[in-house]
Length: 352
Ligand SMILES: [Zn+2]
Image (cartoon, rainbow, N blue to C red; front, side, top):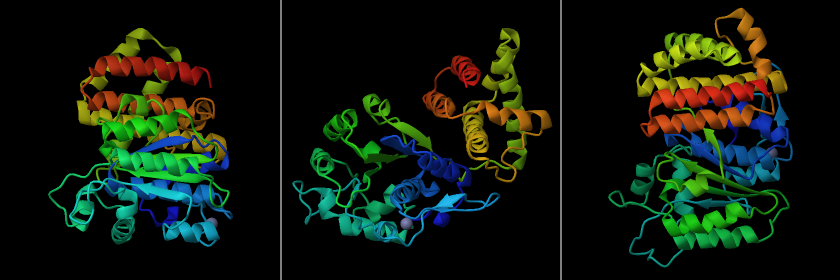
């Protein structure tokens, strides 16, 4: 999969290629978002870009700033999902032909590739079980699959590049599978990349969550329109200004207003903030601006704020926003969540 074949997600993609080009790839990451929004496709395109021997870079102003070439030997094998250093793990069901003793990665590999091809790597979990003619079953990633992973990862890479393990629907790992994986996360081997792809954090062990870097994949189906975007932009500008001065009374007013929005709006605002931070980082780190992305509707802010997001604080800001989204989803008390988030963000912006 090349990035160009993925629908939307341009800000995120440019962020990802920028991270790889700068050599700051973290060894364990979780692509978190709806399957239909391309989280698996993004993870696979990311791995392909990492291993491409002839990465393409495009002129300033192009929608996509970089992509894999699609032609080198690594790209060709990635396209067919047959690269010997790419390992796919996914939930499986037991069927008459696949008893409980087999390793799903071996038993269902062909079916899984067929499924990914059919749905352009954006198929849902339900569609996967339908593909297996097991529509009423609940799949799982079992201990035997994880043991197989650990074994595979302990081997040397075939072609000298990155060994990549992609675990699709990672929340379907049972406890023993998760514990097996944990050992690998604790002792990462060199040039090994573990990409978890998940729709929900709720079912994942906190010990795993704390060891992976989260990449939030925006839900493109429920993307917000221009009007809401403008409202969020205004809110973001006043929030960031408050964080500089950290006037408690004004901050407390802002938190009260945000609290009153309700959970869904709060979550969307945090997603907007995440996109805004990414867009600022792209401008500072690589001079990339996508049309409209850095238009906060305030000229002074538009020109001065992006420089506040740097290689020193971008990942931490991203993580703080992800944690807040998670807390809101889990019905945390919004006033406390936004107050804590404000202190964290304020510190990060000042220590840029
Ligand atoms: Zn290539």
